[in-house]
Image (cartoon, rainbow, N blue to C red; front, side, top):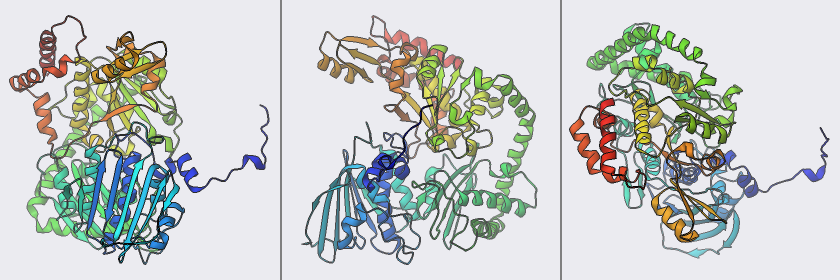
Length: 635
């Protein structure tokens, strides 16, 4: 190996904006295209909103106005306003801010003086205005470079700060804001700040009952018992159980939604199990106590320590530096308040005990099957036969940041899985090959997960048998053909996850891969089209003599082409549970035995299927009739 010269000329010093743009992941996590809740465009919005909410928490301003029109985002708070002489500094000088002084912002989310600087550096346009006591200061930037610095001017506006920004398309390619992700972010702020009103594009967001409202909104169907809502100094919790598998948690620190949990969520899970076991004086397994739980916990911590700049996982071991441990603080509160609530509400205790005993019986019934299922998974040579894993997991690296970018493609058929396998990024992308259509598992018990080879191996590949803590891939992507059969497989897989692992869907881990339907090309240019409208535009651009190819299946797309569709320009459609949607009602309609009603629905929506039929002399009604018979037979 030849030696590489290393001298002073190889050492560079980057200014703040260059470093942020070169290493955006350090500041906002992944860039993304807006399909995921934690994609960069939402982190930019959150960084601005965190400052507004911190003002509210400190007692200044009860209202925030937000407008999003196309790429432009405008956020206006009615707090004290940034000190006029520091308006430019707070958005362009790294490690500059007021939150280093815990007297001014005692329990703030943002402590590092980085947030709005990252927004500035990663925006093609950025403007900040501050109004204080009749005076206004304005500054404008592009990509972190100051372009306009106005003098102080008189203003009759109410005190506060306005930030306007447009995410830079050089950094965020093909991005699109999704209403569900924005609304979820805003509701979380309101649930945790019950006196705060947020107005977004004319709609008002406000909560009166905090985490009780959050859990009521998140529940799929009725809870088994009335939600237990407990509030103390620097802690609020809401707890109930539902008729589903798994554990579902919503955890927060100083208003920050810690989607990856952390020390507070771990302490909460432990405290709930211990308190309930102590109340009933039973040595139940913690998993039996918690299966079916739906809960939220919010704590306020002085100088919280997060495991990354995006603040999705709390690392603090203490409620404040040198103070009570997180474990004892939450344990003491839950042990006292939850125990009191159960003593005062014996009917709730009775329902809870019945659920725990049911969980225990099912676990014992499944114990032998689970053991055999694990042995079958090993004998199937999982990593060779069904799963082509990625190096992130093959290396068994601990706390590897690449794990957050890890993806598992679930596809059907040798040709499709072969194309993806050859074109994937072997570092972070894995492929799981289905054999035919999965079983319709609607209405079945978890026993089928262990007895059905496909489901057993998927569960083993994801490592979610004992909950989401072991989830090996951040994104699970269903990759099927864009035809009736492919959509049926998607539906069957979504049923599987919603039936047995709903928290995987609710925490934004499940996606559908969008692949092009057409390729339009001439000798100079190739355009891939994801809809008929895009195809028409491509023909207009390249001319009517352009060659048009209709991709009927993933296997028809060569690996050289496929790498474009699962690389930087990957298009993913998130599987999201919209506000007010009842999952069991949806599953009952689409996957239950209401044959006449579903047939009528399919016929009324025939145009969707017609678009998927090859553009030849084929009667789409006959195609749908045949497919409908196949679907009904399997259901």
